[in-house]
Image 1 (tube, one colour):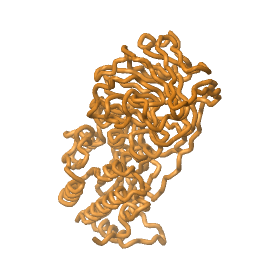
Image 2: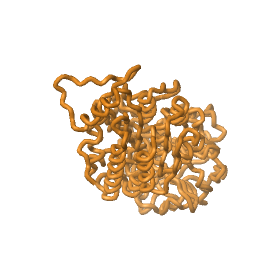
Image 3: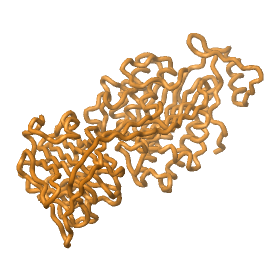
Image 4: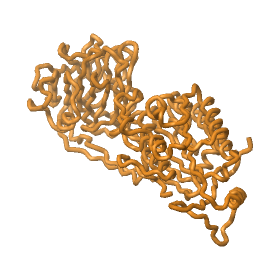
Amino acid sequence: MKKNKKLFLLPALAVFTGLFMYCKKPGEETTVDQKLDLKSETNSGLTAKPKKVLFIGIDGCVWKAITATNAPNLKTLMDQSYTSTNALAQVPTWSSNGWSALFTGVGVAKHKASDNSFSGSDFVNYPSFFRQIKTSLPALRTASIVTWSSINSFIVATQDVTVKQNSASDNATETRIIQEITTSNTDVAFCHFDDVDHAGHASNYRTTTQMYMDSVKAVDARVGRILTALKARPTYNSEDWLVVVATDHGGDASHGGASYLEQNAFIILNNSAITPQLVNALPTTATESTAHNISTVDFKTNVYGQLPALSNLNLSATSSFTIEFRARATSATSDPVIIGNKNWASGYNKGIIISNRNGVIRANFGDGTNRLDVDGVDLTDQLWHQVAIVVNRSTQKATIYDGGVQVAEGNISAVGDLESGTAFKIGQDGTGNYSPYFTGNISEIRLFKSALPATSISAYSFTALTSSHPQNADLVLYTKGNEATGTTYNGSLVTPKIDILTKNGAAVTWSALTTPIFKRKTTDYHGAPYLYNVAPTILKFLGIAKPAYYDGSTLINF
């Protein structure tokens, strides 16, 4: 296939009542493609061109992979468009959240599609932009053709589009979108490709992995064939196309968490009225902390703690609970256990493990058959972090908080009973034999037999518990870990304590630490667009007013 060096250099429009009039500046150079369009425009009597939209969604595509490999179609399009390589997906960075934002123009606080089950999502009050198109311009032909069926099953309502198809593969999606734009008088069409995200999950979203880079090359070829088909439309020169290309999230080994690499997406907007622009300012961060002084145990090889049997802590498939602790890690390798009650040889084993996985906390839940992993808190700064893990069986959410702020969430509905029959330990798994051991410090351990609300977690993140805690009646274990000597973390408010154990002649040592507690990381994104800015941009292009409830605003003033 011969590839055009320039994909989209559309002429300006001759339009009345709110649109732009074409006016060639003295001395302005005209390209061959522009000459073809000018001829078409002259023959049509300078009438306004019908506005049309092609939106190509590439799931899990890290923008750096486009620029790091042979992806000529996307690279050329980026060079000739408004391109944001610093666009942001909100946390949690699941596909449900990203695509919902792109379609609804609102953030997760409104559409509520916080995980890929879409449990609790609200597309009645916050429908896709196809609803506004259907309401304002009902004669338009619209299409949503996707490989990931959840987009059409949950986000795009059947009554809002002319064509809705779930494809069995990216090949089928490509075939159908090309058919749509070449054989139909389509006005607004969306297509979604999924193979890049599958490759990312299998190869850590790294530009150094061949599988991932090959998937980006493959989708680039698809984009090229689609754009070639678009330009081959007999009516193309008399139409005004906005081409949108975007992804739903980035990737950093996986996605779903709060890291910038997971949030970092891209948005490409191409139209004759858009001056090519690269928006790529990187975020800057500042860390806030609160002072903290404590003399506590040094956890290291052959030193760990054991909790007593807690008969009133119910870990069944229907019971909610909360685990809180304060941790400071001095190593960021492998996946040592901070607190857990099972054999960490497999994440599928029945029970719970909260580990320091290469410097990031992973909350793992297994029932012997199914598992859930939720990644959240970054421990690589070696500050203290006040961590809360909340399992709410009413909402089926497993949520991680850092300093009272939610940082990650997962759906735990597929994971059942978590009772392993083994007592919880700190600094070790349930067997007491896992290698490596956790190295660092663990204190302020709190277990509740209920799912604490965010308000309670926030209120007591930087202060000791008292009997006035709103859920004090649900407190099962509380140790401050500040005894400064001995081999015990004494119980506070309730009786249970934690025994500090050793192996192979190791000694229990305590350190007087003045390391502060991480409070929050303030990030300045320097005006980077969010994914929810795409929907209002499409509506603006079509001349449709955005709904008052939108969080996003148009990125281009057409």
